[in-house]
Length: 134
Image 1 (tube, one colour):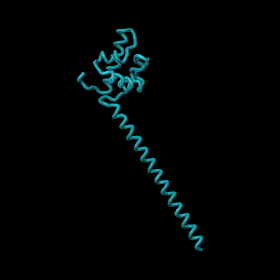
Image 2 (cartoon, one colour):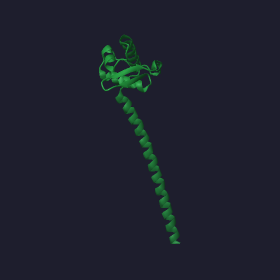
Image 3 (cartoon, rainbow, N blue to C red):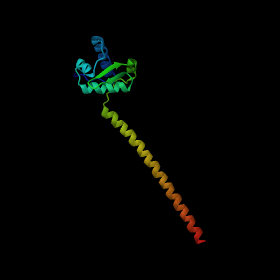
Image 4 (cartoon, rainbow, N blue to C red):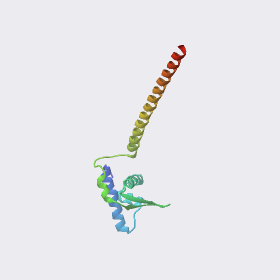
């Protein structure tokens, strides 16, 4: 398929394919069935299915031989931002940058604490030295 779609449209495509196949076969479809119908790769199907599972839109049941899809809460598709195209890599990069920011702030806190301890230690040593001098 040559047309690029956003996350919102992908969600509608996958959920619609699940419903059509469930109607035609009277069974929950597999990821392979959905991908065949939409002429997409299995990787795409698994990626979108996991993304929708995480949002509570579909349910995935895995068996040793196949992965079945069930529509759970189709109205949650409307919560997906329109026009936004994300990839797992960009999501992971955002998470990494957020965690890096948290780590940087934690390092700054530790450095500030060490600086304060060092200052207090020098003040204490100076006080002891001045007492011993007297």
